[in-house]
Length: 227
Figure (cartoon, one colour):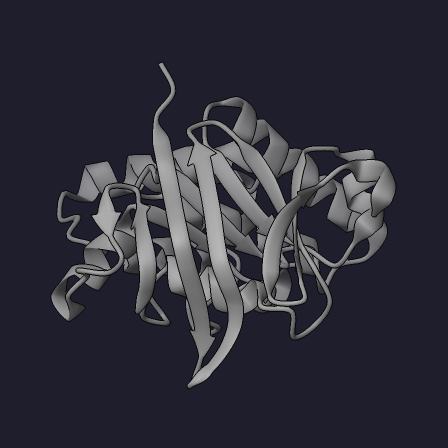
């Protein structure tokens, strides 16, 4: 049975007071992989920020992993974000901590207390992205691709129903981008839903999936050959 992890109906997306997207209607089912494409300034990042509650939703109806975005209170935002995994273009790893300590920090911040449980979880997610041998390294000792794998591992820590990946290959060369995509598709194959913003149309051709485009204030599905 399918489970809707994201539903937007008649949604308007605003950046400051400026409306960037109108009448957004979107249903995302558990297990889907969806690309979000569009030119710079077309509203992709504003849409993503609305989904993880960095921007408020004032127009239309929206639910994400069972949270109502219109009724979301400030105190609920950390709980929403625990139900999401967010992967950014610039990794956002803490430079003064090892990879293990980076992930430990997130788990402790989200309420984990049991030492053995924390150890097990960190080893599990690092193993899933092929980074377990690097657990005691500092971020600066890793390549960009390795840092992004760690960022994906971090996004998996609280077993999210949905992963939002905002340009996760934006700072990576083509070979490394392909490696990161393999990791993401493997995670998707295990049942995780992923929405990924990208400018890299070559990736879409190599790893085809449902594709949505932001253009002229609208969001619509496109077929690959018309990219």
